[in-house]
Figure 1 (cartoon, rainbow, N blue to C red):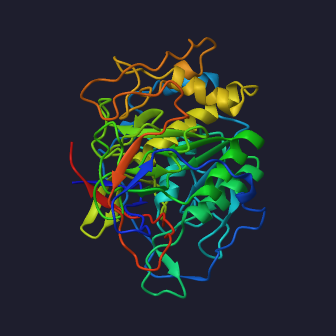
Figure 2 (cartoon, rainbow, N blue to C red; figure 1 turned 60 degrees about the vertical axis):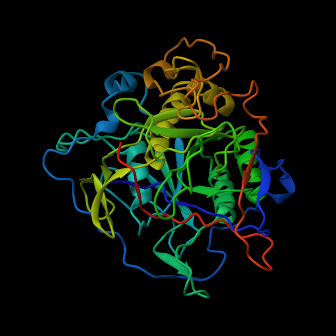
Length: 432
């Protein structure tokens, strides 16, 4: 079984026991809910509950398949991302010899400054975005944009928990994510990479996050790139969307007007079975069996520890930083493009599915060289998708959908709503 490391929450507890209908559309943006500027800090005292992750280095013969489909030399002849600041909102970024330029963005989990990573996930994500090339690395791994400046923000961790609740595992929710987005935007991030996904079978009270995303894009001109979410296993999304009426929503992905949402594909370009479908999916990128930096050493890894032992790394959380790196390259090469223009360019230059947009890969697998070219074609109109694909039609205005679905709510007496923990858990997903 492959391990999907998008670390998301499967279920949001709601206030009613009866099945309820919900609109697959995020709540209206309420700018009054934007988190105020403040130094990053945990909203509650926390403590470390588990030892930090110690993965094994990649063995001899390991390769980095996520780069095989890209013409990296051609990309780098145009730009390597110089001048761009990419915020990685994740489990932090550990210092590494191949990440020479990490800025402390703050810590919402403990008392660090964002340059600590007890879980290992954030360092893997950061490596995919900006690891410097190394001729001694036999895997061929390198970051997409090796000259960017990375901003490390620790927003969540599965190794910590709230001091006042010894039974609660993990720390970080949509509220701390909203604060982290505000911080990243205020630090001048041209790109914000988010691999945290809150999944639910009914609506999510993430209005502060929506306000933060709106602020980042429309006030600070940041491009926000987010993972679509994973299906299967503990802590993942509770099920796949297989019909035109989604039963699972994902945040921040469903804020499609402000987020470039990324699905995962394999090395053959086929959609990954674990990648959550939805009307908010914009593009896809390789996210299976990835290689990236070792958070506990100076080399690279192709697996992370689980309860069952070391397992290969796959998930939409590893596809998203591929796109974040390409966005940084585009912003470096075309500095006059606005955030929204960059998002449109990424979608317009992707390898479009034969029958147009679909819910599994959106506008298709990204094409970095095309996105960096001087001439790009206008984005095609959204077409009817393949009959066999879930969510078979893309609304004409992708940002104004309202698809109704029904879901059984989990009854919690006396609880009006529960926060969605963005716990970073590794969970099994079906093999392709």
